[in-house]
Length: 479
Ligand code: 8ZB
Image (spheres, rainbow, N blue to C red):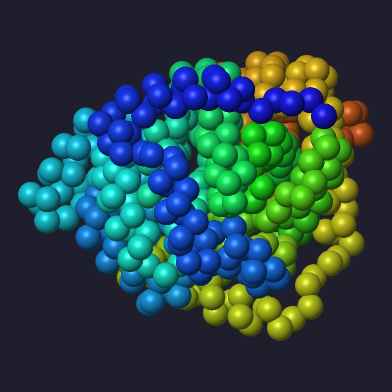
């Protein structure tokens, strides 16, 4: 197998630079951090909790506020009142952009205001000791959730701070989140993050890694999300990551969503083994609807519960929950717990039932498999077998194309829309390397909808679809 692991010497040089780039970096002593992690109770370890749950669907919220004590109270509430299995720490937007001086002002303002003036927890500013106070205060594993293209310092500080899982990837935390960051730069910076996790791993400390599956959360075809997840998975495994969770965001059509979850697990497993990896621990996470929500809380619960059902029927290991406040912004802790409880009720009721496996689900899974194979075959050709070079070249060529992404390094030429049953299909495939049969399949499905609605397939359908769910429907039908 080709060894693409970051060279030890390059990694050491980069670490010095990263740790000296902001004062709190100096407190990271990796030997001491490993001793600290090794002494943590197994109940607060993410990878071990995922592995121990096999078959039982775990529930996790998103949450993060500016101040340590306030953040601890929030997590404790979600753990006790919300009965969350796994806890998050959502990082604020300044920290995600490495703007630590502004994060510091946000902390100051929050102290003065007596409430959070940041949209998440500024972990870099709070430093190793601040992070340890958080992770030590709860009895569940805590994951870092963010959206950071260069997360090297954030990873150093949070892993030394007792976090045991780290979300993101060089593609999924660049393309949907930034405008100008070159893909080759973010992929290189994430090799550092994965190598850091790999280093902990080699020292007997498992750190779970979770690429961000939903991407823009806006009519993303399953094949695009899955292809990116597999590439980021390969990049993580190459650096020595062992516990890997790949994600998928709810699209809305149940058969397609269930099929996508099964396809994600099976395809990823196949590609990883084909690349010579084994002994990895792969789990899958389902994200409840990442698109626009209605303001009406009862209607929001309906979307949350459909997501909970599909997560269960699709065999997810974990579900990330939304809240009835989604349309309004950051939820109160009470609303957050409500989302958790609604999800839990549904999961409990479905867990006693047999999994659904219909002909339609099998068909959808077959289609997704062929699509992903087309995309990845071309990607590996372009990269001569290297997933990093392949990913960069594939985005340049539009072989991978994420709809509605802000990045200039994404072609943005594909046009996805819903078919007559609400499944996400592709109207204009841009440069996605589909064969003729696949292209024809998408066209046929969209023609059925056009007939039903008595209008031609057009960009108007895309716009209608984007707002449909928040207006109470799945498919954006004409009035
Ligand atoms: C890409 C993820 C977006 C989702 C939620 C948003 C949205 C962001 C926080 C948060 C609770 C926070 N989100 N920041 N939820 N606390 N600090 O992530 O509402 O659903």
